[in-house]
Length: 454
Ligand code: SF4
Ligand code: SF4
Image (cartoon, rainbow, N blue to C red; front, side, top):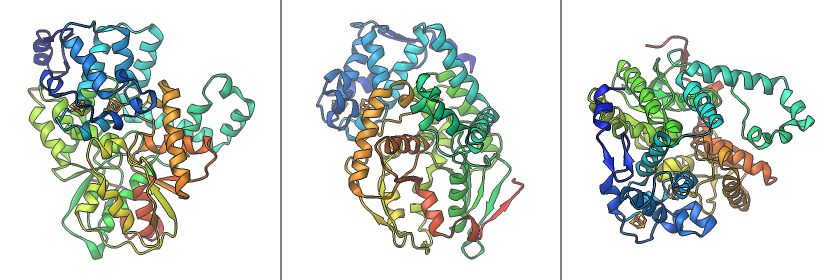
């Protein structure tokens, strides 16, 4: 981290907030308390309590900023972490309250000034800081988990009941079948299908979960883009996006990851950066904000963010070649919060699904209401996450869809677990997997997979 950033930060203060990452005073003042956000807020919908609404939480932030409430008041702590950071409130606010950065800064304040119990610090250090610092650590973990699944050890362990005893059975249920081979940046690239070849080049952001657990979905995305005329590279040297760290208020680690990604994608050129995970895409599009005070990276971060596009955004803007293989199924679409609310991308996924022959898209109720995934929320706030997941599963069941399409790995895992818990056999897939199927899939796709990359 730049030294100047620390030096200036020591002088910064807003009431009970101090140091780096202080909630923006102007944004806090922008709230006119109209209450239009309340009905969009999942935690308000579940609890009916004003404190659990966006307006209530903004009031708490204002109270700390005005020195009317202690930063370390348990109520403030509880509400900052009960929030899913789904940003549904932000999307409907007529005053333009940019809520996401406010709650993230509030959490950063808590992480900086509150002493957590030793075990929580240990879990955070290993889970959030150490594990995500190097992509090969995530790959090693997912390889171990894949072996656990492939050797059928998972079934044996489940039968013993030990997971239930340890309270880990629901967590294990979140785990989808893990791809056989991780996608390692710099090792694979896709050339455009000859007939559709253009001068377009795209750089795929791999992501830690998408590049391992869902590596084949990233490959499907690359094939779909290649089918539509683009050369697709997966630049070497890229890291985790840092979204989990930003959401948890661990900003220093998030900034380290952001700088590494900016360096890696600058080295690879200035092509569009395509993302298959809505949560990663929202974080990458906000690097400009995350590093706005960094004297070395501020401008580069803003430029990087301007290159980022969700894969559905990119494909819909480029008039795709019509998919031809019929997909004769009824599907429904679950909107990831960080696609619909943080990136305001709602029409493009539906446009792409409606282009697939044979596919019938049936809308579910409350498609854009959070499914309860929200990073690690479904692990640390299980009851509320389960309530939201069950509500989502009921809406899916009402559509009679055999497949739920989404665009974010966290949603995919939460939906899968929630559907299973509610007795549904509906499959959960990423939108590019369905598109890839309709373009002929891996076997007939004309794009070339190479073992080297630029
Ligand atoms: S909609 Fe916006 S202005 Fe109205 S209460 Fe919610 S955050 Fe405040
Ligand atoms: S981010 Fe989501 S959960 Fe948090 S206050 Fe806004 S709508 Fe409610």
